[in-house]
Amino acid sequence: MTPTKKLAVIAMLVAQASVLHFLESLLPNPIPIPGVKLGLANIITLLALLVFDFKTAMQITVLRTILGSLLSGTLFGVGFFMSFSGAIVSTCIMALLIYFGRGSGITAVSVVGAAVHNLAQLVMAALILQFAGIIYYLPFMLLFSVPTGIITGLLVKALIEHTRAMDRYELFFREGQP
Image (cartoon, rainbow, N blue to C red; front, side, top):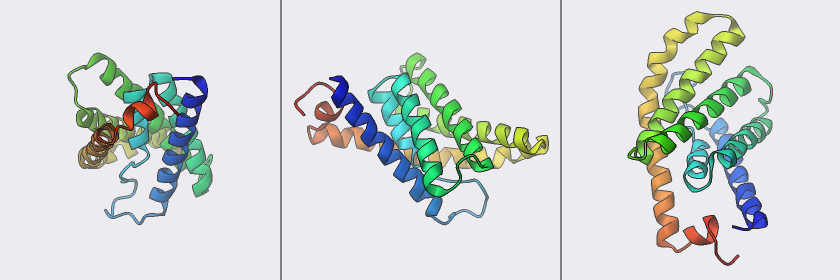
């Protein structure tokens, strides 16, 4: 892929992830437990890990977290640091699973990523609030990591299958005519 084409695709992915991050902040929480979200922007992170490399996925993760928080008005607030830490750590763990766990399916990687995201968020909250007792909230967060991770994983899988079926996968993510 030419550097210009790769930059354009990455820019589109950052924009899509930022919009998903922002739109999710506008949605009412369907579950009456604070902090439980679908993690729609993680769709783009997982997609980037699968079609690009770790460095590219991390760039997208950092940029989408910053831009999404800027759009939702939470930049440099407690929520930003929790989201940022969760996104960075989960991207690293998902990359390790993809690299070392060749037999791991997309959905399994996504579920682990969601669980790690929640764990990292709670650790960051404990550090910021200087209250270790918040870790007792972890079982509730992990309980919701499974369905949200499954949803994200299935959406990524469907997205990849759809782009391949429409003969767009090579056009967008590999060598091909612009």
